Image (tube, rainbow, N blue to C red):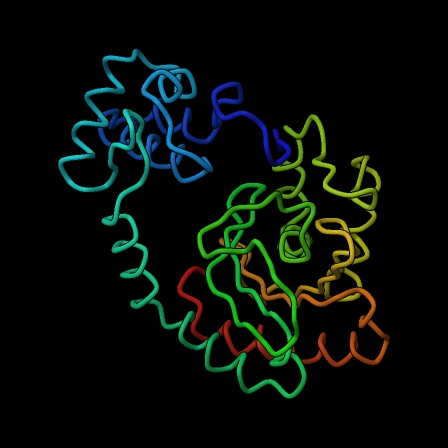
Length: 270
């Protein structure tokens, strides 16, 4: 189920983390689930909150937290738990070892038009966009798109580009469990029929548009990397809606298409 931003973590268990808890290596997957819960929280969490979110005994969660603290993956803050520096080290190691991310930074800066805009690279995890890299252009647009952050795919150009690139049966499998679409702005999709029409239009024209569906006053266009259906990847450009002319849209789509094809040659996840 896609949930709106701001939902209480303690009241809304992380479905994906719970699936991990049920896997064959409970000690490891439960520890990973703790890290995932903390990564999504905007504040430190208590053992009680973590236990409720994971549907585990408090004693089990306390032992997991103690083990993760020993390895500097999490730390105590006034009796609650938050991520520690080791998580950042691991993330930086991933970024440094991925050719695609270096290629994105180099190629994005050289684009004739899109280099002036905020460009994003992301992958798709179920129905969430995960930001992998960002290029900050010269335009004054501030985004809450920190690397590693997740957003509902259906309110982003990146997410809609990747969903539209999926085979029909895979798309329907992912959408089958959606009970309610997240409504970030008055322009966000309210019905599945509306979303499906948008995805069909995206598929036909080869790029997606976030028409102020995520943030009022902000428009994005996105293009999926060709051949990345197993693990979809996409690039996007973000700009103020008042600047989104037909001429600029066409230039951005051309640049993003060029960037997507270049990255497809080095994408390790495709």
